[in-house]
Amino acid sequence: MLANERREAILRAVERQGSITVKVLAEEMGVSAVTLRQDVRELAGQGLLNRVHGGATALAPDVPVPVPVSAPAEAPAPAPAPAGEKYAVGLVVPPGGYYYAEVIRGVQNAARARGVRVVLAVSGESLAENQEQVRQLVAGGINSLLLMLHPGLRPLEEAEQWLSTLDVPAVLVERRAGIQAGRLEQVASDHAYGAALAVRHLAGLGHDKVALVARIESPNTALLSAGHGDAVKAMGLTPGPEFLISTTGDAVPADARFEDVVRAVESGEVRAALVHNDIDAIALVGILRARGMRVPEDLAVVTYDDEVAELSDVPLTAVAPPKQAVGSWALDLAVRRLSDPATPLAEILLRPELRVRASCGASRRSEA
Image (cartoon, rainbow, N blue to C red; front, side):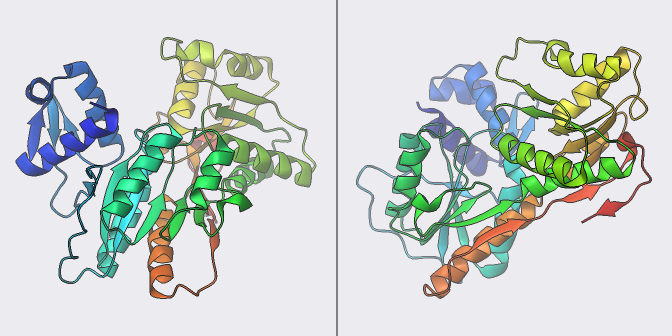
């Protein structure tokens, strides 16, 4: 079975039974327990089920799980929408990553308020897999698409050309596309602004040089780097180093990944940093403290994400992208387009906010 087929089967089993046991379901599906356990972990990270010891359970009744689409090669005519539902909107999300759960929740909340049905598809890493998921959704009768495509989708030119040929209105969610994408609408967090917000805050605390620590694999790293660089230039700061961290090799210990950053702090070269994301920032704080350095005294830290920043041993000041709002705006754009096809196309950037805690050395407050 393909990964997306397994995950659809897991969600259906959880919806039907209320809970599943990894060992039992793995035997029924003819896959290894290790593989199925990873699938459960990915689905839990997207907020689609609750992961428990040995298995998974359905979400609480007030948090409905969208049913993944699965259509045969020749899909039957779409079933009529249930009473009270005006539109059906397809939502394509990549596998894994807790980032997407909050965006999905924003879509769900807006859809419930507007009487819209959301049909979820978990896509793969290739362009062909994304195209197939969209084909199935359209064949199943959805009216519009919300696309949170895999961040590593390549080649980009072919992806944008495909997006320009879609047969139904579509909104690109937390992704940016060029002019080749045609009539595609877009809603995203303004990550460049968020990075600049962090630099401005740290400069206001007396730091004239701010480093950037970010994941190579993240689709947002280029935007964070641009915002970081623009803020440094605009404020006349000394350009700080950029440390690009790779997380693809799980066998590489965290100490090794952050060794260059730690050395820069030890030497006094770096005294302030914006770190993307929370997990990496928490790991870095732990390494520094294990080596006798203090946060914020030796390194003032602002993290970019704010999913778990407050849970750090030293609560982390964080830039928080408006993830739920992104999902809500995306759903609203889709409904607006369906209600009035002649309305102008929209490209919306929503600004993150700064949430100040202990790791930067400032009094607790918030900046828009």
